[in-house]
Image (tube, rainbow, N blue to C red; front, top):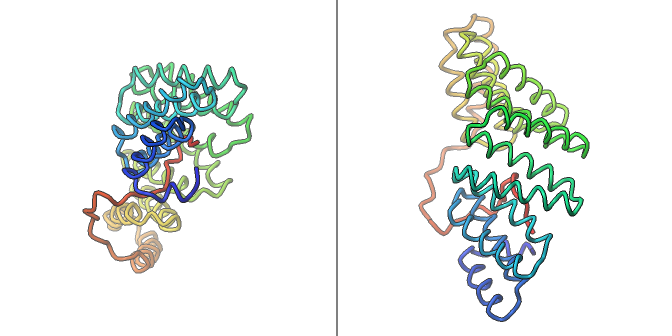
Length: 286
């Protein structure tokens, strides 16, 4: 799908997709519906995304286009995860995984397995989900997809946090942090440090929490994720009187520099027609 199409308003693309379908240009219509689904995913409009992926999938199924079916079915499963339709997501991603495996698409199969782990976790099947996560981790490792490896380990750590298994959570997230550092993924480093800061705070280690929050804020800033950088900085500032004076002086300097460098907060955009075209990392696009 061309950048020109992706720069268009979703409603306009949907009109063109309907026109293409009516004129018999089924492949073009399916790709357009899939593209709009990804655009809606990028702005957390998951119900709209779900509808677009369903429309795209139906066309691909009528065409018996196995590649299109695989990719769109996977995207549909991700939308179902975000809608917390756990049973549907598990069934969809199981089907996508089987189709990816049948077509020897190892990367797609790994993605579907990762999604299946998340959906199973949402169902409440912790142990089964962990099994899927570990298989996905191995699959990404075989593919030399270190970003995928780090993301899987990070989600495993977050799952342990939800179970309040702080020791295992910390150990797991530190493994993710190590990979994020190796691949120089600053947003990943920020997420891991922020979550490790939460764990340190819960454990009563305020000094460690403050240091981790500051490191997270620095990496969010470097990733230009300014809103979260600001939030994490505020959490670090709240701990300044709970840490040793030497630590406070060191962190205070970094905090002040970051505060001065952060752009001014802007008012939320009320324009419903303004869409961010950046597609979520966790989607496949035609």
